[in-house]
Length: 422
Image 1 (cartoon, rainbow, N blue to C red):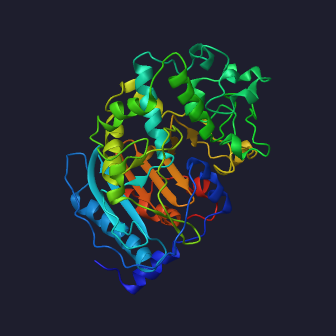
Image 2 (cartoon, rainbow, N blue to C red):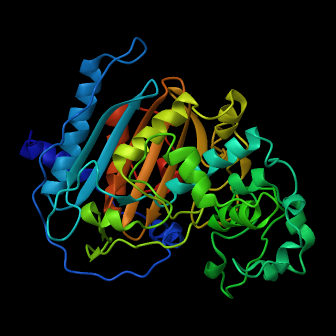
């Protein structure tokens, strides 16, 4: 159903500029170069079928449908106006997928973005990685609170093949780092070493003392699992433990040739189309390709706690340490005075947790120059909204869409995207 002109105007008013900090925030999650072609404004694709069911603890179907209708009107208005090119949506309630939809276009030639279109998962990869690590913790393969040195057969600075670890040779504090700190972004690293002015990896604060988002920390934990004593192949472990478990047949940590048949290219802030990056290396910080259908299955399974002990599932969304900065990026900004901090905002394991009007909740974003993803979940309802977009400007719609589907959950949007988001 096409929205009225007034609805379109209202929807367009929610499109507000992202702060410049967002553009640099998750750039490092994408490892490849990008080529561009000219962008064009395209009409929206017809809505895809909606799968809906009910259970005793789920909200009435009419309320769910109303929220979906409102979200669809917002998305369609933005696509019709040319503000965004494509977006995929999933809604989970009571641990079950209730709706999956795709809108707009997956490439510059105008092919429809469908629920089976392969899209870049970006830093949503980190949540899937954390889920995998928690299974390993359940099995005793790794202790979240042991020094990473326990699992290495030589000092970390001697591992030269997969990072800048040699830069830590004169800083023994690396021995204080634990898997828990790495999963909760408390090791002390910048987001990535190549973002440092001199390109060298360093510890900016004592491990465990504060939060600072770091993909480098996830890469370090990957090294511990793969090159350390566990001796695992992370790509195979995630395939077996997550993608196979949930029937995510079109999800992988590296590029697959069969993805090319239904693949989303991306759109930058300056409205350029760029090709999908074919990632050849497994990177725990963000190499996953997925579809909205597949990731919805993971989100539903996560809410049910499938594959984890109750303790490990609870640990993922337990506050591990307070978040003390005004925004997530830049990652090493000064901490706020205590009186100005949001007291409920904290690091979980692979997610950020908070308390809102509907109780305890968590979220995780994923972003690069042409990708905008988010997952927002409310624990009491076992409800989630997942939004994947091949257009970075879609993030400006996310606060509105999440409210339309979940109601007001208290998501810390200003911390995630900057003070101009509403």
